[in-house]
Amino acid sequence: MSGNVRSQRSTLPSQELLDDLCSRFVLNAPEEELQSFERILFLVEQAHWFYEDNTMEQNLTLKSLTLREFTSLMFQSCAALRPYISQIDDIYKDFTTYKIRVPVTGAIILDEPFERCLLVKGWKPGASWSFPRGKKNKDEEDHKCAVREVWEETGFDVADRIHVDQYLEVVIGQQRMRLYIIAGVKEETQFAPQTKKEISEIAWHRVDELPVASNETSSSHNRGPTGMKYFMVWPFVGPLKNWISEHSASASLKGDSSNRGTTVWKVKHNTASSSSSGLGISPAATLQSSSSSGDIIQIVHSGEPPGSSFRNFRFDRASIIQKLET
Image: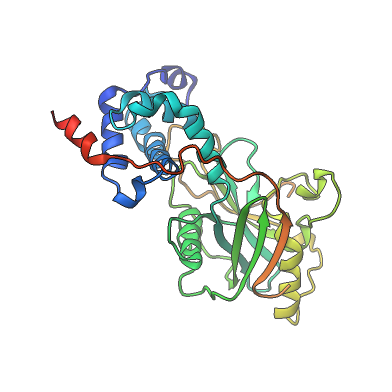
């Protein structure tokens, strides 16, 4: 995006636009999604994604907003949410606390010789590498969430490859993370995310070069030998190496400088301010500085449960719609 276009992005969404987003993503949601503020804010978050990914592309004057800023505007502008504006700080705090407890599932995709795994890097500047994964929807089964999230982040369908008993799992804080192991994927497989402004790069990384969890207080184990960030990878590396040793008789995991991590997909303009959709495949290029099934590893349990100020909230949609129609 040029500096001129960036400077034009100073307009806040109109009342009409916010009403449309509220109607589309909140008022028309299933009844069970409107029984708590936590669930409602997940709907507001979906509206925010739509605003950032689609609405802003149609109107180059609209300002990019953080989720907190967008939530505040929705509560101020939408009749359905306005009665609760005075409590928004507590509501948003409860939501962020609740959000980090939602289980996460995804997949560890291994190449055919079990030497490299597929990692994705987030969109924001300074984002770390991670296995493709994401939060479960309400009542969604773990393996189905994994299939959905892997498809969204890599464009690779693992539905016919996933085995529900082949996974590694850790608990970090109060959040459970389960990754199903998908082994034997061809190196030349084409990958590309199906969502906008979420993934900036997809690459094969050598398993033997990934940092392993340690008892040290230093965060140095969060980074690989080249300084790359692997904050959501390192807890799985040790168990993954054990899995590979058990399932591949020829697995040696010895370093090979001629077969280092390789980028297989990268956004054309690798900045969060790009005005394009950011979806495009660049030629593959070498990075410049680049336990058994069902194992559960308890990393740490800490933190207090979320506040209960709004736990018994009930969203009276009927009365709100009636007010909107009068």
